[in-house]
Length: 187
Image (cartoon, rainbow, N blue to C red):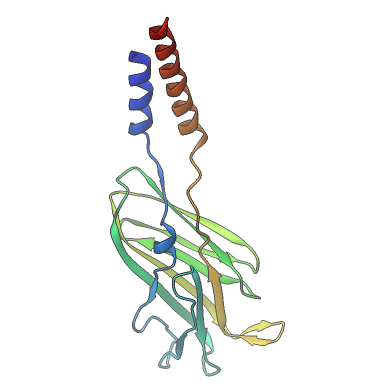
């Protein structure tokens, strides 16, 4: 019995990977003035499919040079200090774009993600997350297969987080202990 309590205590005391649920993955919104082009007023267009975790940031033909677009959302308190926030971004655009992720308790630097590739950002949390932002940037125009590319298209894949192997081992060991105790009591 004491082994089971020890194993269960170990599982609950360990740090966890924290992810957004499907509704949160589809709930990002575009910030006012979220696009930046040095020297000019931004021409920023929201072409996203709401609620599905598919996002498009587009700039019109007058935008050249560095552009930056940001989507963000406020969420209910998520995780605790010591957990790791994990967010995967899949680039479905024809060209590479730079992505970075920030929260109210930490950030992960810019990574260039190529067409058809994904990157998982990890942020060690110093407290609960209540705000998440994704920053997309590039130097325009990008020469695409169908002409100059001024549109960043990306997805936030959903689904339940995959438990860490150590957590599953501890949980399995605890269940074996509980089964053993039940079996001994039946005798």
